[in-house]
Image 1 (cartoon, rainbow, N blue to C red):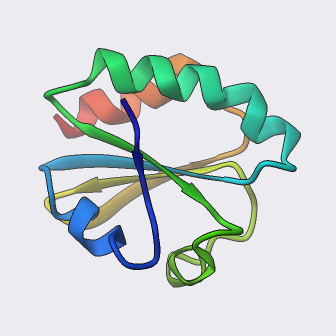
Image 2 (image 1 turned 120 degrees about the vertical axis):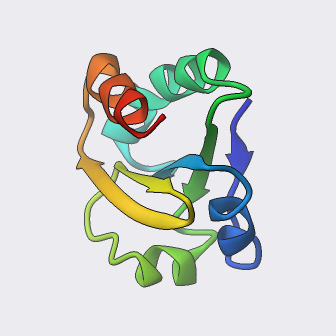
Length: 104
């Protein structure tokens, strides 16, 4: 299950596990809605191995600004609390899992 990112908990979540992926999205974003089921699948598949979180850019503007999110959806990948990679746009599931696997 995905965690929800807020301005207040973003750093805590990033540091809560060795590998973390955050999906920056918005309700009005068509491509964001298109990849949402894929992100949910990935969250279930990687449960216990990586944290998958979602950040609504309208609700957590500070978090989005801190990571220079200019386009959504944007997926950020962290390892050991450090930003390692990003994917922008409605990407395929295999692109997401390849990034996660490379960090595990």
